[in-house]
Length: 350
Image (cartoon, rainbow, N blue to C red; front, side):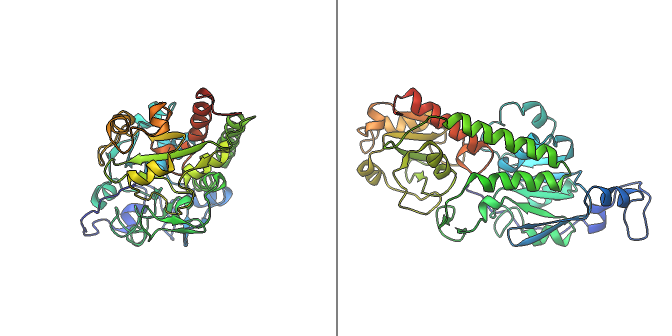
């Protein structure tokens, strides 16, 4: 969420500089000697349909750049740290268990890097979690990278059927997001890097975690509200993004299920009217909005006249999630686990 624009730049790198491996013997068509046979044997060239683009890879990426944390954590979970040239745009500490892998990959910026900075890494593949990251006002457009011969990939969660990225509040969805779309991204990236078995294993593990977290859970009649950030004009979850997938998985209700905006800004008086049973708080470490951390959110809720008398606030019914768990990503499974555990601990499930 909340990207800042980058200044326009001259394209300083040529396609050849990006795609040619130094010191490699070349076939007449420019393919490194011995590479063509190996690529053919492993399914390359490979073309993936992605958000209205055709992404063609002549070989598995070896110097990729991931521009959003969600995409980065998928690649690290697939054991691809050694294929990453750099990462950028973080809202939270890296997923537990990936600390060592992440530490081996340079970070270009905590937020959006400049186009020049990305090009300096000489990427052979660029991934992002959001259309806006690789769009006008983002790091650069997909076309700018592709003119340099650099394939790009955007999470299908952000361009799935029914997603309108031109409306306010980080876009809107007429069709609820499902975890199958997240699993599809994992399979796509595993295919792109030639590690399909790792992708299958990762998805199977995530599905099992969801099954275990929700087994026997009945949270019907429990209302939830998801607060991502900002205290003056709070970004609260609408019906159909990642929080919607979490809510459906645990069988609860979202008090703002009647809005299809991804993260509408809703005033506190309206929140008071809805009076949720439980408030799910984004616990972010970035510093681009007010009330980023869960601690700051709780302090606001318990001192603000419009919110301090909410039932969830009076009874301290809070569940804390990472920002990534509230975005469509493999961390959404973590969100299901934590909300399910929170509801059980609060004694609100049957």
